Length: 291
Length: 297
Image (tube, rainbow over all chains, first blue to last red; front, side, top):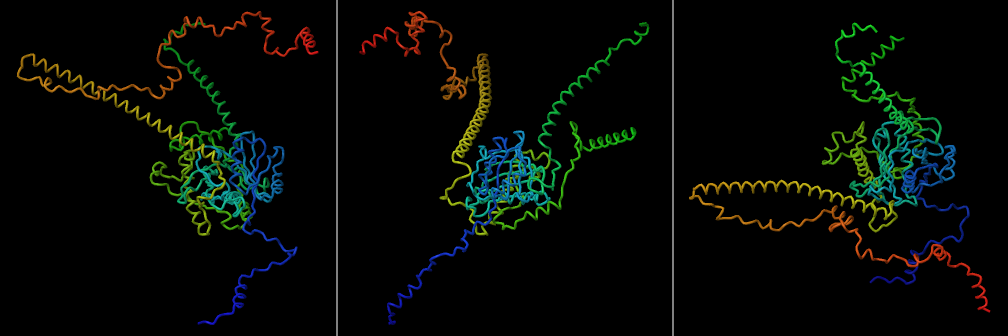
């Protein structure tokens, strides 16, 4: 039989293990505040537009704001203001990136994507817009979930595409542990290049064996220029195949005008031909005509 | 100068003819392609900007994948043509091909990205009891579902109509055949009777022995049912019964005085005006007012 331990000995031992750490009564005022360390990437994106934006484009902007929990909103900017003001606005809003929708003539939409204080920035023409509100896209995802960004291999082939890819990654990727984000990954932003344009699609990951459903929005970005600075500075790249919508409309008008002129020409030519035609009579009939 | 320009134009004409022969040019409207404007492509500058832009964050903060599209599944191979990934030229305007390419690219991205996230120990799937606000509201999703259902229904209906149309065509053919067959039988019977009459009494009239029973199916006459469109039209415009004399006056309609107002017709227009509903709260006349005053005191 083992020797019994004294009661007092046992209690003192167990008490030692349970004993909590004693907090200090006061805290030194210089001591730094303990932060939540998880959310470190404080990247924010300012998304706003100029005045005169159409309803569809406004909905598109709304969709982007909804899909990007790290975005911030601003009131519409006056058309008279210089574009460089955007830099100041985003600084005031604590944003390092900016997506600015510039509407012109109430029908053309341009999109600026910029790394605000220092550049670079890129200007696109936005074409073929379909918003999330449309009924033909059946997918759905969590409101703030972080997207997987999918890029075409062609993005690595040229310098300007590579730069745009990096810019898009930094703008569209939601920081990890962002307080407004969700901890699950259930959608993909798809960027592809076709016809020298960037095609944007958003798919829901229904199953992880790559079953997808499209959520929307859809849009095509036709690059115009890439600038070294943000909203200005020297041009690094200019798209040679870009035709502005104004020019396109003018061409259409001209083609319509040419249609009328062509018709007149054809009529004239026909009349001239008709004059040449003669009935075959006797050529000697005119011989004795004196007048 | 002129000779030079002539030579130039000649040479360009020859070039055009050669191009036409080779099949590079097609007949029709050919637009002259302008040389590109002073296009800028500063590769060094772009590379430098890219280097400056890099912020050295880990992959988990970026979650980007650069992939080629997956090969298309077998049944779609012949629909997509030989080069399913090639979107140059007119292929961009082929909606199905283009969207399939994007879809396949996203699929490839999922197949590469999700395992990568799993190796980093990050959960990607949402548990079923985790509810949170979605990008599209429930109302919106309901609308989408309704639209899909409506579309499916319309497709079904049109398919049914198509089938009915074909059946009708087939039925006509069958009926013609039946008629021809009947006529043939009749002719044969007439011939047999002729033969019998002529005197070949030994050959029997076999149709007298085994008379074909009338088919039971034909006894039930098909009840005619109008189509859906006809039914709707009948509902809208009415169906059946005579419409010819329905608007004539009858004794009852002529003696119907229900909408005749005696009051309206017995008064002069001036008095009628006075008794307008708007005049109800008018101040009474002086005499009446005086009388009222006296009553009160």
